[in-house]
Structure formats: structure tokens, C-alpha cells
Image (cartoon, rainbow, N blue to C red; front, side):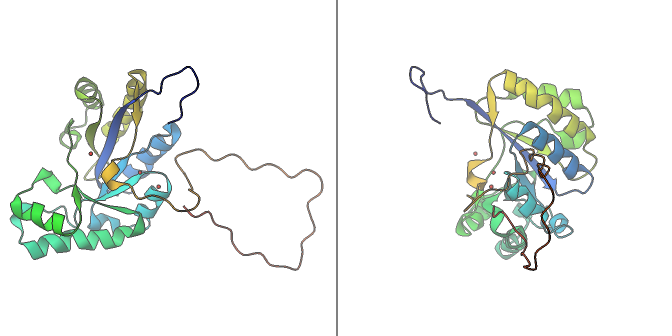
Length: 238
């Protein structure tokens, strides 16, 4: 962060919004529209079986400025599995996430023991838990979700929410309310550092509204005989 002369550099309060159990074809697009409109990056922990139905979803999240984490293949309680099965649960999802997937995992139910920790560490995976949990998976009450988060959030809080696993209209409504309320309290939004994968080249940031194309001035150019190939912008976020 660059400070201007006469002004001390400030250290903003940070909150990490995280979403589990996706992707979900009903909930995820609606949530992403809210985040894009508000220019808010978030961290998504994806279930491999759900991602297999939409394999490009992880890449779209990454190119939109969000971070992507591993939530196992089948939302398994890893503490009930042997080391080989734990490895398969994580590795299968990681492969599907592609180069935009961070080396981080959120164990379903927050269930971890010495075996799970040892396997994940051996795979080079960082374990990411949470500090604020409004239990949005258990009810459809946007006011409760909003109130719980606002009353428990602190600097560097990791907020656990869900975009998969069932209807999430209340969660999406709560996110709409939480973003401006948290900004009023001086919070900025970021992706979980352990899950970030840096871009190389230029970032295609779908979280920022794209400018409308300018209408050409004057007559349209006559078509030439030289074909042009498709253009692309190579493309990023306790």
C-alpha cells in the first residue's frame, strides 16, 4: 500500500469471506454476481464431486480474483478414513481444480486428528479453518446470519458461509447486507493467504465490471483477407 506525503500508511482491518460445498448451479452464480457488483474477493472451498459437474468453475473463480481451496472429493469426514483414502479424497479434487487451485484444504466438519494433519502436511497442503460460524447451513434466516457475523467479526476473521449443500437464498441475502455494513465498520475484504495462487501476465478480473465497448467512429473498415486468431487475456484470491 502506497502512502501519500503527510499521511501515515494505514493498516486496514481485514475480513475473509469463505464459502463451502460448491459449486452449485443455483446458488453459485447468484452469489458471484453479488461479489462482482461489490468488487469483493472471496475464498471458495470446492467439493470434487460437485466440481466434476462443472469442471471450468474453479478456473472461472480464479480468473475472477477469488481464491480456490479443496473441500475433499465427497465431503468426507477425514478422521474416519485411512491415510490412503484421505490422500485420494484430496488429490482427486486438487487435480480437478487445476492450476488455479491453492494448496489449501478445509476438512469437512472441521474434523481433524493427528492422522489427517500428518497426511495433509505430507501433501504440502495448508489446513484452513474458520473463526466466525453463523451456521447458515442449518437455517434460512438472513437476519440471524447477518447479526451473528457482525457481532462476532474481528480483524482477520475467517467467516464460514456456504454456497453449496442446499438452498442458500438466506446466505446470499445476508452477504448483500454484510458487505456494506462491514465496510462502514472499516473492514476490507481479501482472500485467504494460504489459498492464493498468483497470476502471471495480465489478470482477467470478472469481479470488476467491464467497460462497455466504444462504438466505432466513422465508417466501419472494409473486411480484409487476413484472418485474425482469437484474442485472449491470460489471467487470481488464515
